[in-house]
Length: 111
Image (cartoon, rainbow, N blue to C red):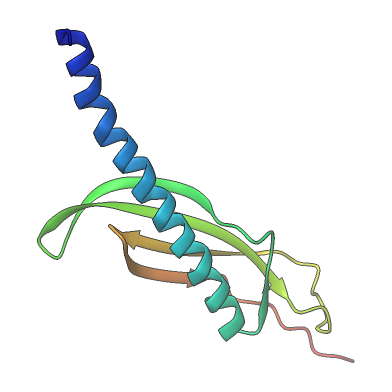
């Protein structure tokens, strides 16, 4: 093996591990968003989350990758104003859930 092949190998392995862990965290983010929507009686739209940003932060004394995932939800169809889309967010530090957020829902009173 040449020096270039060894350098490529040492560079490629951590990138593949980072990507695989990111996919696992994304699956956890989808499950968390589904559970959050179900608990709040709203509809999880599109069935997926989107990586909004990734950063390196110190959490609990350790440096971790912090991933911010965004998702959309709406009120259930039987509610007035169900066609509005709202935003939610789940944040993971490493593979652990750090925080969740959902936009407040506007509730219209029937006349």
